[in-house]
Image (cartoon, rainbow, N blue to C red):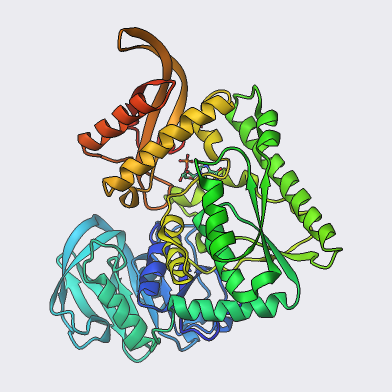
Length: 524
Ligand code: XMP
């Protein structure tokens, strides 16, 4: 897909943990941003047609043996550049400045004194700014043609500029929330210095993506595996808008869904949107394959393989039914931007190295489909905005992540219909109480886990020997790290009381107070 009609900022990634944050800040300015590897050539950058470049920070030192480098011809492209932290040091290093290891590592908040308020980057920001630093090395000699525009107590080159070339360097991090007016700095760069237009709106995205989908698909047919999650749902709505009946969604009920999930998906997509929706109830098939299995990896494998089989059968059946006329040439997927960014893992950026084990349920390469991935350019929050704009209800657009293998990863031990019933009922209570208390949309995930543990209890005059349910309620930005939510006791009490009173087979509820790492979010 092309995106040439939008203004654009390209971000060269030198391995900073904040690279995606920079990309999001630019998009919050309604300007499209794209992350590229630090070693992209000047020709590649030129071909992108970016209005400006941002060099991210990074954990390396410019003199280190394996320091990520850039193509110096980039400085000849004639487009504005903003170097942040390592990005600034690298710019200084290439353009005849000097970078040295600083005795005092500067970390945390600081104050910036703006010496040249007429510098476009600081336009309207006053003379004193709170900023956030995180660097060991620092620039000690200005590169030729540059001047200092701001200082800190520890650095006389905290912000520098080459006004003619429109090159700027910041020693601190404007992209993080701890630099409260950093967003305005980024706005100044993208609007005033790079001349970008505010054309990256979800409305313009939808319009452009629809024409791209139409161009890509032509008269052919597209099949999409609808899971009910945000990504596949929004992809479905977008494709439906673009190609209407040329889209068929296949919704596989694997028997491991939450209560009412199958009905909700059919109501929203079939009844409301009038999409061609093939509902396949494969509950028996999945559950019989899972019978007696307790090992989490085996469960995942079985579910993944089974899904592929059912999906293939369903598409084959659909094709035969229409006498081959709707032979699907394309497979649509709700792949998002963070899945396609090629992560640069340099030194201390472990987040980039943690590869998820999650996509076991993907479709095999030998399925002869061409891919349509209309959400490839979007961050999750943008996907939600697109979904809302396309008319999807909040119960779909704002829902919490739900794992592909479903409740299987939340039932420890064997998966049976009875244990699914127990977990579904407990889960329904968690969701409804979290919603009623106004907490559901504030947290990353809130769910129940059924443990393979029974314990003694007493109900009325009777002794019980029943199941334990654990509550997992976490906050997180991206699922990579997470912390347990300090939920008010009253809400915990209500959830616990309701589960124990209403769910037959449960006599004990525990609250999981582990963070990730070292624990994970799901228990498996
Ligand atoms: P963990 O348990 O690894 O989970 O801390 C991190 C996030 O990923 C979700 N998750 C999955 N999502 N398919 C998915 O689409 C999966 O197999 C899967 N397993 C875990 C989990 O819910 C959490 O948000």
